[in-house]
Length: 149
Image (tube, rainbow, N blue to C red):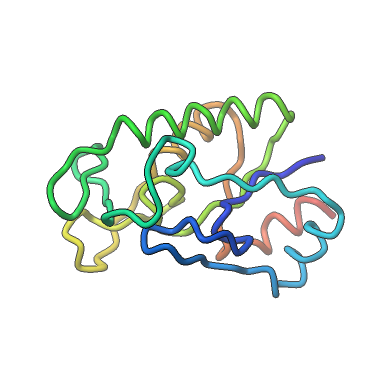
């Protein structure tokens, strides 16, 4: 079994600021990594966005960056490629970055660039959920761990 994971969570420097959000020190993630079960991917980079890039938040369903440019197309391409990868690898579960405009699950930033959260999912997360893939974040790893026992 393979599990999709946001590349930034495995230490790849693909975040908007050129950094990462590595959770490789997490015992459960380390185990999945050592068992070669994780398939890393960044939907934003996969969609054609550079690293680093201007921060993006979701505003009225569109991916708008901090200087007002609409980047929705890149997010949609990334989501489509992510879904294709999941189908190709029979992936049923994903661990995606909490609050991200692509990968957020349950909560995302509100589009004001003030770190204000609202209920909702990122663009890629919506596509995956609509296609039957269960999405977890680094905040809900315990749920996936229980499911896999």
